[in-house]
Every structure is written in structure tokens, then in C-alpha cells.
Length: 593
Image (spheres, rainbow, N blue to C red):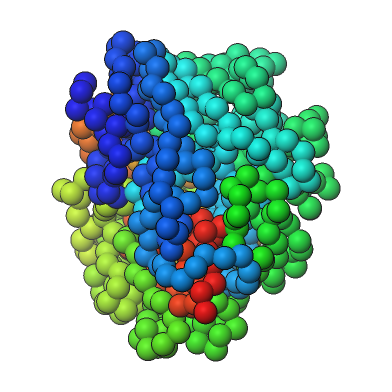
């Protein structure tokens, strides 16, 4: 027990060490439930590091441990300890940045956002109740100043002076409203499964209860959340809460289909304020003068620009038309590195790309033999050599290789065309018309589509290859209107938290967009979610990975190589393997000419 508690009390957590203790928040629940307490001031979740490189201040915490549980405190000043990859010069206000991206966001609705571009814009406009540190992935304060854990109850204290961009106060009532909005059945949020362990959450989500008894607003700055059962991922899942104003949205349609004017010009408490959105072009936001971190953001404005393809992103970076991007084609690595005014970073691998199958739509795809045949038909070693520019490699399974839960015994599916043909023969003749779809402009995924088409033709399977707009494909996957889709459009694996596999592959999970169901896997996912000791989670996640790799609801075919690029005049950021990359905490960026 003491060893687990130590994970929470560490004042500094390396990325690898934290991935070894990713469920430390859950361990704190276990500690409190067993009557444990601490006489130290925990800082591992409160002030590990922040992306404020170039600052000269120090981090302070203001928390007092309680005998009934663990307390985590937060930095209350904008100057914080630095583990930056870019610093230098004086951090001062002014300037703007143009960020190039590949795909258009689907929404800026914080109740239903579920893909990388929407998630990032929501964070910029609304912020997060709890953040994940960009370097260590440790939960750390944001709008929540601190939290105390007692048995299965998390008591959150809000920061002082948090306001929405219109100047109105953000209170615990707004946070409670947002969580309930995500859980509400009529919202149909892909995020809902993350909060079903809140007492009464399942009933409220199922439409059999009118309220969530586990959510209690004690006063305008205090929110208590009681869980019905231990949940190792709960505090990480609170990073998916971006508080919205109850006064403006109570009683309104919060779903993806909502026509509410609020979502056309949202009001949030994030570092930036919505200015305009030219769909398929520029999304523009300006500095929020009411932002609760005084002095931030430093930049006056950002433009999030959709560019047709990853090679055009390279060209735009070389020409100076954009200032940064996390999506340029790896083919441009040498050119970008050779440009004196650019920083080029190569982050660690996330969970792999591949194909995911709509098992509910096509009985043929529901046959495991068919999905396995796709794996055996693809020579991913050859694909990596030909198309990934020496920066990527064959994938193995659903969890990123840097995670404590990654099963090192996993191997890529071997290339075996005879085996693939035998499996297809067992399954029967493939029907005509099955579409394999990727997002247009992603050169690597388009290459993977072309390669897959050629290999499956050798099996006598003539697929329909399709490249469409990113937002359109995301919508098709979320509503399960696709046949076979590129697996990382909305995520088929886990990079930060292995607990994400629960939402994606548990029967009825709100992010289960394959229709996959396996009662044995469900039991293991439930067991892993409730197990608060990371060491005991490891063998459970090993079984989970083995089952998924055998059943293949998705293929984890190749580790995608990313390039994170920014002009050298920008300072103050930490690069990250979070989906927003180096732009995770844009409010800390500044210009140093």
C-alpha cells in the first residue's frame, strides 16, 4: 500500500515513470478506502511540470492533506516549474500564430467533441476541468484548483476568479451541468461511458433517473463527485470535462445535431475566444482577457488553418505561410530540418494506425477469419520500408509501446498470403462493394489504402477504395455509417490511459464504433477499470491485448511517424504525444524575436 501511495506523493514524475503509475489517482481512492492518510503535501498531480518554458518563476501549492484522504494542490500563479523543450527570451504578450492542420474539426461543442481537431479547439475555447501534463501525462489542476479523495468521493475546489469570456462567473454548478449534459441520454455523447461510474450515472444515462445523486454542488467553488465503484481512470477522464455555461444552455439541445446558436459562437472559459470559422479554411480565435491565469495567453490570436494534404503542409512551412504543424508529411523531414528558422521534433509512437471494421453493418466483416485474413495479407515490414520513410514501423497491438500496460510479448501479424487465402476460403467469397475509407490528404493513410487494395486483390477481394474529407469520415464512423475505416480517425487504441480501451471495446461503450462484443473481454475490461494497483493491472491488460489482437475488431498495423514543427521564434512550449502535440498548452507560447 505504501508503495502505491508513493506514486501519488512524488513531486516529479518522468513520462516513463508516470506511465508506470498512470492509475495513481485510483490508487489514492484505494488508500483512502483502507483508512490511509498522508502527512506530506502531494504534488505529483498538482505541479509536475507545465508547458511554460522560458518562465523564471517557481511553482507553489496550497493544499493541506486531510486525515480522510489525499489532497492535491495547484499552482496559483502563472509562473510554474519548467520542463520545456523550447525556451529563452522574455515571455511577453503579443503576436499571433498560424497553425496548419490536415482535417476540419467536426464541432466545437464540448459535450460531444470526439476527434483531435474538435478536442483541441474545445480546449482552447473552454479549457479543461482537469488537465494532463503534456510531458508526463499526469493529471494536474486547471479550472479545478485542487481535489481531495475520501473513500469513493472526489471533492474538487475551483480556482479563484474563473470567468467565462463574457465576464460571468464559472461555478461548480456549471461543471455539474456539463458532466450531466455529457451523461444525458438525449445528448448521445461519445464521452458518456467515461462517467458511468459516477453514482447514478448509469441510470441517468439510461433515461431511468432524473438526476445524478453522485454529483453534489456544495457551494459555488466546491463540487463533490461520489463514485459507485472504484475507477482507475476517473481523474484522467475528468480532463474530458470542458465546463460550459449552464445559464446559456440549460434546457437546450446539447447533441451533435444541435442547432443552438451558442455552438456557432460559443462562450467558454478557455485562454482564447471564438472569432470566426470558415469551414474548410481558417478557424480564428483571439486572446481571452478574462482568462483566469493572469497574464496568459501571451499570443493575441491564433488561426487554425485546414490545408489540403500533408505535403502541402510541408510546402507551407517551407514558404513561411504557416508557423507550425504536427501533421506535415515525413517525406519532408530533410527539407524541414534544413530550414534554419524551423524546429523539427519527432515524438514517440502513439497507438498504431490500421483498419477498423463495422461488424454490425456487414455480416461478412463479423467473421473473425475475414479480419485476420486482412492482417495476414499485409506485409507491414515492406510497407514501413516503402512508405514510412524510415520513421515508422509495423504495429503490434492497441496500447502505445511507451505505456506501462503495453504487452512486450506482442508481435506484428506475419505476412502470410497462403494463410490469408485459407481464411478467406473458410469465410466465403467476399461480397462486392465493401468500402475501405481514409481521410483525404493524409498521404500515409492514402498510401496504406492503395497498398491494402492491391494486397486484397490477391485474395480475390475487390474492395472499393475511398478518400473523403476528415470531418465527413469522422461523422460516418461515429454514426456507424462506414464499412471499413482508418482506425485512428477517432481512435482504436490507447496512448495515455489503457483504460480508454473500455470505452472503445466494451459492449455498448460510447466509443465502440465497430459493434464488437466479447463477454470475456468485457469482464477483463471491468476488472482492469476497478483495479487500482497499476502492477496488478499489467497482467489484466496483457490478456486484454491478446484477445483484441486475436479477434481483430481493428488492425493495429503501423506506427505512424509524426513531425512536430514550429518556427524558432516561438518559445514556451513542451512537445507532447498527447493528440494536440506541441500545441497542447498554446496559452504558454510566446514570440521571442
